[in-house]
Image (tube, rainbow, N blue to C red; front, side, top):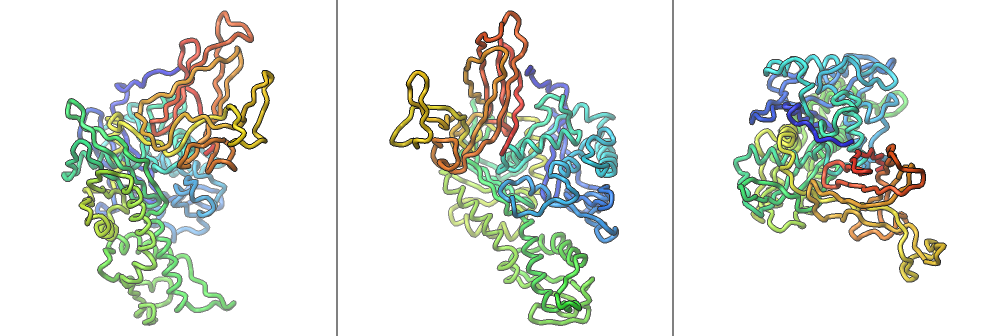
Length: 582
């Protein structure tokens, strides 16, 4: 049965920003305004980026983890017969199916994400071992580090038993992807399957960033009715949400999502891929051909150059200066000069023009266009807040300024934009009601029969009931309208009659079409798909005989980040497990 979450038993909030290229964590006490970041990770110097690379290094022979995080990044050239796993968060983006490569080692995204996420919680030595012990070393090393870090800040032993967690997800993710993240968190030992569902909360990354910007940015002086956009630009995804500020009678500020959010996989990872492709094209002009006549560019020095680009060159690029790099390592180009590609004795010049054209602009333009697309749906947009690692890019900032400043829309980069999501997750754990409404990105409904319309409905859908009535099969019955704001605690309740002791099964469909779907068959409705189904077991009921009618109320909560379903039978409320298909 459903019970309220015991907030007082969990005074610690830990926010987890699981990113495509980097992951971060912040934490704090419920009644304390101070939030602490884990800003130094194993293998990283004090002055480095305050997040941990989302990278794993495995031995191919036995699938055992060798290194993780920064150590995996630094150890790629130290170990033979290894597999590098990175950017695997992209495997949960349904829109990239067929674009990203198959994961090695017969692993799923859930397997690997469980490995990354579980490192942010102290617990048993090994909690999930898919087909092997490959997570053992990875978990134990990170567990020890996090315990030491939090102990230094005054946390007592077994602090995790008094912690609740807030995990961030891209706004564009499907319900199925969100469910996978929750399953990964359980497999990782962050929470157990027996824990109260609300011990682990999910929040969209731009929502978390909005809470951070309000708390920390001096330029956040929005008045009642003003709109602002969060552009959360990370390694894999760029997520956008527009909020309208609402002040209540007590002067407290709340955020109402005023348009349906947008998201796209056009983060800085795709800039990296463009650079790799461009570098390979340049190197082919100077690399010697192999005996078989092919131009073979070795992976190790190419990977080294990519690290140089990601860590040093990319953050410096502002569109006004050329960039320079020593590419001689591993390429045997110490004495090589080739003016046509900017190569001078092992040093290569990348002009600002070529970097814009071939590397940055194809991705930057997607981000700007995405912001413009959402801005057209607003009425009083005052500012766009740039957060995330990619959001701190000087070149992205300059292009956003160029596009929107003429319309008096301020472009703001808050302090420490790379930690906005992790910190905002903690703020959400402290005040989950700060977000007042959300806008559904889909139509949600079930399949029913309805009156047959001979003009609109195809004849193959016509069915004749025993009572002689003519009905149309495969009709879509709407529960939630796409684009219509929902309060976060809004409940859609429907009453039914079932018969003892039968279980009740239901399937939900969703569509992102602009108009309301008429059918649940994809050849008649754009993008209609099954998204989840559930079964409601009939509990034992005293004094009820087989075949007796039983009133059943199904409650659905669509305003939360995760869909939630409850069933009421005989005045008792039960949580319903949903199985997501998309």
